[in-house]
Length: 107
Image (cartoon, rainbow, N blue to C red; front, side, top):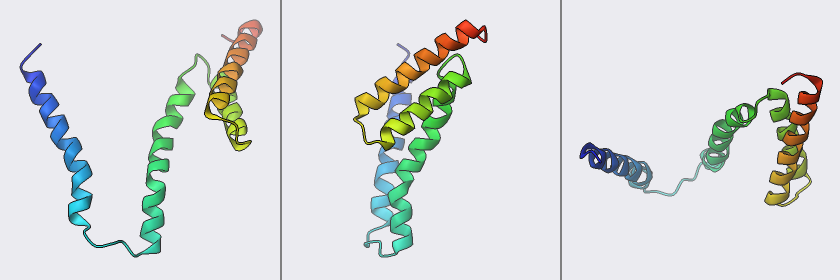
């Protein structure tokens, strides 16, 4: 292992620590603005969606099967099924869609 790797790990640790500590240091008073509170409440969900959505559409060999899995996951999640049920249904939808696309000669 290169000695530089330890420098990289140290820099990453410091940056990660600062990202978590700076808001606590800069905002010592309680946030009273309802708009700012609601904005901060939804930031993690928006970031997660922004990181996950492109990966969903490029995870399979076809966008069509990816969309089939996405729609299946959205419907089963809307029906308040468990996380494992949502994941298994989405995987099954992708599997079936890819097999149908293979039979149709699209893949």
